[in-house]
Image (cartoon, rainbow, N blue to C red; front, side, top):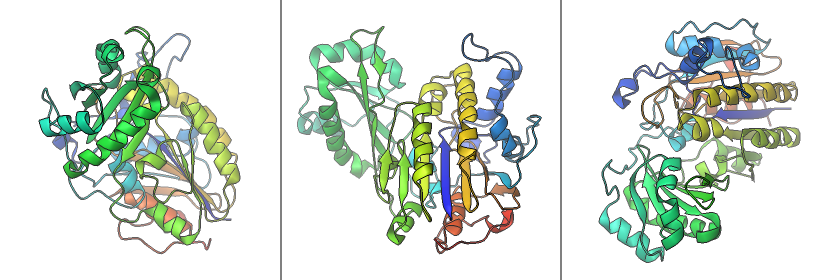
Length: 415
């Protein structure tokens, strides 16, 4: 049986990007700086975690080796490598450091065009766009209209939003327009409908995503975003690994926001839940259900939204340790002919300035029982991940990237 499992730890970069200076991120290293903070006692939190970072299962797959490949940092963890495990790092060639660019490239389609962005001004949106949102979205106006962190802008405008019914619209350095609205007072379905309208309006501007950001609570002190977020992404301009698999008749099970990222193209089934641990439960269930030639593609978003953007080092470390403990359950489900890859889509160094993503290389670690495993080195594009999965599942080579399956002792299988 040939099955593939691709787990994306959203924002878990490992530093060293050759072009990081271009993005103002020279020196950023999500994993490296979290590990350093833990070792120095700066990521201790009572009731959550303490001491050095403990991720033995990922270390046994070669995480420390991958970190050295990416950035040359001597991150020391005392754990032997599992037989048939492999490790390396990958450099992004897409022009952005955002979620769609990273995931599309992982799935074999680098983003060669430039996304549209909104300027860091007030207002951030062109007057024509704002007018169209109000008119076609049938809202009395908008609040925000600026660059802002999501939790902060909800605290700032949430009470006014409840009083007067104007949605909170904001952006960031990513190619995105986010809309926050109260699930009850504004309405969840109404928020989704508004986002669909705005998705159409920003298409000419090449904006990558419109994101619905629902929240609950009645006051600044009690506002809380919910797990009913929904992303409305531009469809990939070419077939991805997912399209190639579903066209062949294989099943692609999307865990978390994977379906949204690919505009639900090439997706057989979506399974969602709130939070990394609930998402892991969904991923394990999909692994149990996967058949010959199938792919389970999972995104674990909390690392990014809950801890990276909020610059919460202890929270990020605790989330990594919780994920690592659950990883043992996934490893127990890997059999002969299976391939498991853990990776990331970009960085979000919680020790870095600001609140935005960081341009970093990503880990490419995993296991395939029966493979010789070993070092896959520094891959020149994330697309090598998708091409390796394609090779493993018996697909013909795609247009971008190169498989490293032969390097780790594998060969194409017929699904």
